[in-house]
Amino acid sequence: MASRKEVTPALIVELAAYAELPLAKGRESVIQPTLEAWIKDANELSRKMSAEKYRDLIPATVFRHPDEPEEGG
Amino acid sequence: MGKPSGSLLELTLAQAAALVKSREVSPVELVDACLARIGAVNDRLRAYITVFEEARKVAKAAETMIAAGHDLGPLHGIPIALKDNLAVKGTRTTAGSKVLADWMPGHDATVTERLRRAGAIFVGKLNMHEFAWGGTTDNPHYGACRNPWDTERFPAGSSGGSGVAVAARTCYGAIGTDTGGSIRLPSAINGVVGIRPTYGRVSNHGIIPLAWSMDTAGPMTRTVEDCAIMFNTIAGHDAKDSSTSRAPVSDYTAGLQLGVKGLRIGVVPGYFFHHLQPPVHDAVKGALKTLEGLGADVVDVNIENIHGNISAQLTIESAEPSTYHQRWLREQPQNYGEDVRSLLEIGEMLLATHYLQAQRYRTLLRQEFMEAFKKVDVFICPTLPVTATKVGAMKVIIENGVEEDMLSAIMQFTGVPSLTGLPSLNVPCGFDGDGLPVGMQIIGKPFDEAFLFRIGSAFQSATDFHKKAPKI
Image (cartoon, rainbow over the protein chains, first blue to last red):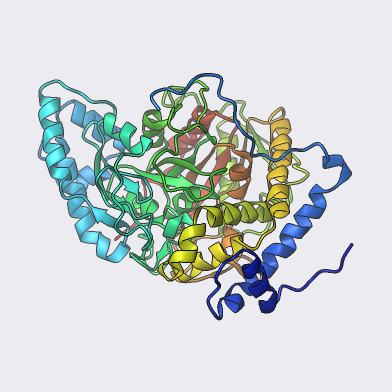
């Protein structure tokens, strides 16, 4: 497993650039503590959900196939 | 007719509706009493963004109709308020934002339309956390909404205005919306009843979304019976919202008197009564004892993967709003409040794999709960681990003096129904030493809202927490 990369303000500026999100100066420091905490927890959840025993689980969001035509638009 | 307005405001929705039908009270009296009350308290509480003075004209029409024998339905002439993310045709609908400060929808939300059709009279649009993305209702554009039990405390959110409006007796019921807890949190913190329906039971058409895969709308009232009456009018399939189900709709008031004898209540050891402020722990434990005294059994049930739900909740609840707001965040970032802007920026930086693993976790958690429902009928836990904190606080102390992030902390229990799509009902079940309300959350099987109302009604028949009123 790769070592954990620190979520620094500089990294946030790069991530914003990837998302084509113009981040006003100083915003990277504002969001850094929360983003770092959330990514750490999200990575932990990803590790759990990558376990072999969960291989067959599909995401909760799925396309629906209505069995009847819509009424009245 | 001719009751003093103070006593009119103490009526429950069910009582007021019965008096309107029997022509003992006029809709005009009810609306006048509510508008006067709003005028008296709204400067202090900031529960309403918009007040509909024209409701008096609607009330006059409702009075004329009832006198002529035309009864529109169970809410005929009853003053109701709507969270300001529900569209009302031709009326400003802000979602608590500056971005939509001047938005005038061209149509009603389906929930608005159904309430209107049942005879409800709208007295105003309610304050909320900006775009429903947060749990404090400390709104930078329309003022910080305040808790009527102590105006130095927060009302929770995002439907904070809805909880406050009901608790402060400014209307007989309100509509809130709930993605990660936004009906249940302010219901608990303000001492009122509120239901997050099964995902797909109530239409979201015409409601500004927060996170599509978890958004719901539901009523908030003072009693369980009132909540069931309002739910009867809004539940059901809507062709304008493909996420709504065609599962049959019950009469949600029919079983309110059936009691809880033989009911099996599940609790998850090591999670439901762990990491709580002591008064919350004691109040909810006390509620379980009350239900046991009424004939219910409490059963320990393990949900193996319940830990991890807060991260899944935050990941989904940040990625989806950031998608909805993507254009506005680039065009007018300055028009967002500081906290919502930050959350929307954060949501752009999570990975697609984070989002999809969180969605796979929902499947897992739902499977575990559905398996557990073979052993129990419902689960009961605190709605949130704390009572109302100070207005403006971004941290919360739960135990041992340790400060925690507010958003993560308050979702400790509400995230579970949000992720699993299960219905859950907040019922007031006590007060802390400062007189601040505590709520319990009853979580049920899909589309089993009637059963939740039955349990809540049995509890309210045996207790009087819901009869206490804040002194404002």
